[in-house]
Amino acid sequence: MYIFQTVCKLQEYLQKQSSKSKTIGYVPTMGALHEGHLQLIANSLGDCDLSVCSIFVNPTQFDDSKDLSVYPRPIEADIEKLTAIGCDVLFLPSAEEIYPKDLKSPTFDLNGLDKTMEGANRKGHFAGVVQVVHRLLDIVKPNRLYMGQKDFQQFAIIKQMLQQMESLIQLVRVPIVREADGLAMSSRNVRLSAIGRQTASNISKALFEAQKNAKIMPLKEVRLRAMAFLESKQLEIDYFKIIDGDTLQEIESLELAQTVAACTTVRLDGLRLLDNIILK
Ligand code: AMP
Image 1 (cartoon, helix red, strand yellow):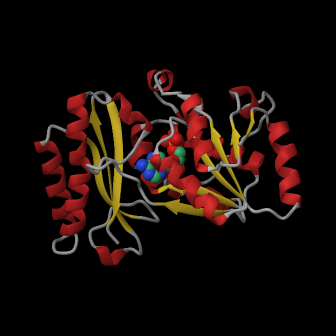
Image 2 (tube, helix red, strand yellow; image 1 turned 120 degrees about the vertical axis):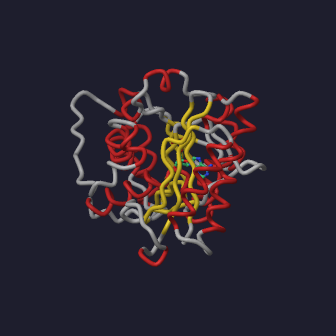
Image 3 (cartoon, protein in one colour; image 1 turned 90 degrees about the horizontal axis):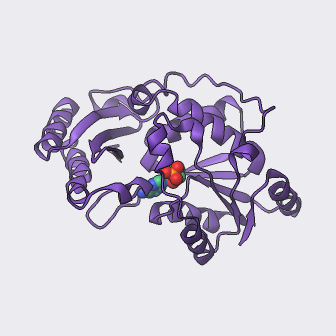
């Protein structure tokens, strides 16, 4: 695997590859790689001639400086995992490479997608996500971009950004990879206490139950039951919403949207844990 730390060296290599008509697949990450990230890379490896992964803990998307300072950075282990899976290129830039002083980041009309759920809870988070993904795409110039369903809202926002840019990049959504007990894999899970780790498995239990219930009862009832279950397990709910997958607005019936998802974030051990399930 090639590892590049500068934009210049990465682009020099990638330009040679794309002039050989190679399709480039790209997986942006913040590292502390787990099976979820590796699944994105496996998808890219299956579809594309050349797969690029980046690891960059983007400071502009953290609204909480403590969360940024304790974000795990096991870079040696990450390199081993990427090498083992057969990733072609790792881009490992510094903040100066991503945000040079003269960088101008465009703004996008996100149609209100950034105002709800995570956007309502984490000020400036999506502005930071859009800024970094735009910059990284401008550097890597991939044919296909792989992102996880785990960050359902982030996916919808990047889709909107690409539409506004009239970009030809194909955005691919990869399903959530879960631990054996159902907990959605996340780089932050390592910060859970032993008891917290056990309690956390109830998040996906609530979502799987919601998926069953959505077939037989009104969505309002599905939501209330899921929230009551989470509260009964001492989980502090930031939000639990059943939404239209395109507008991210809450809806009352499965018939009212093409894609419907239940999205939740709960607080546990000082962490915010995100999860979701597609109901339709
Ligand atoms: P992160 O490193 O948390 O910024 O995540 C990088 C990418 O991996 C994003 O597109 C995430 O949605 C995706 N991802 C994170 N966790 C999972 C998971 N458990 N299953 C599938 N994709 C995931």
